[in-house]
Amino acid sequence: MKMMNSKAEKYNKDILGEVLAEITPQEQKRTDNRMLLAAKIKDGMNAKGWKNKHLAEALNQQPSVITKWLSGTHNFTSDTLSDIEDVLGIKLLAVQEEKIAQVNHYHLLVTSTAVNESPHGISLSQSGELYSIQNKNS
Amino acid sequence: MNFKLTKLHQFNGYKTGIYSINLENEQETLFERFLKENINSFKGEIIDINSRIVTINKKTGARDQFFKLKEGNPGDGVCALYDEPNSKLRLYCIKYGSTLIVLGGGGYKPKNIRTLQENEKLKDENYLLRKISKRITERIKNKEIKFSEDGTEFLGNLEFENDE
Image (cartoon, rainbow over all chains, first blue to last red; front, top):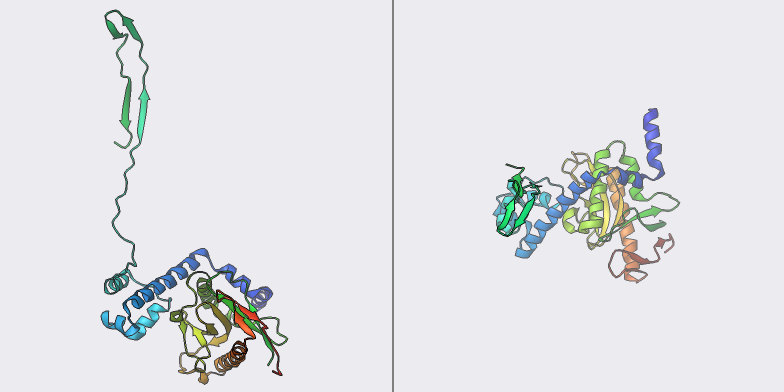
């Protein structure tokens, strides 16, 4: 009982500020995404001049299901989003295959070599490679 | 009934202005009272409702699809915010296009009722907003209250006296 009282007192100061402060960035992002997705679906329907019943018919759903989807509270499955994409001709899932660039790391080794000059040309005083490249991924 | 419209500056986005109502001699708004009445019993739902209002305020605007419309008299803008499918809370508001909403109160909605008239608390909260909406509409018609250019703010006299 004492705990409940202290909790109530805590919220009594600036309850709206306290509640807003308790929304984690992750929670807010999830809400944003659900509502933005619903808004995008509605925009797609508007572009085709569709009411809820048209989308319901196209997807063999009850109109009440469409109302719930558009309310921005629904946690869509990727299958449902894929079906909506098909009938509305819009993109909701960003899953296009992308080439992942492979990064090769090389280690450059430079070796110095003494060079003798003579009237007959240039000769190396000792054998050795000027440089070598090693692929560290290999 | 005396009351005043109060902008809730904690919602600091630009898509939709968020207002609530202070009844006469009340320090807290109807929305703050709603939060206090329900935070202990329905904390998750209260968090969710506020998160949705933040999204409306900052990202989407008050699109019709996010509200259960026609919860009041014809054309008075009284509606309820859709919330989680299993939510037991109902929050009433008055919507002015997609750019301004006035948050009222609400309460627990038992599963076994079909209409708000079956629950005294919900009925009281809803009918209060209907009365308030009527008074606001009169002032808008009389041009005593106007909207800002972007539609997110009320401009004019936002205090309502009993003897009008």
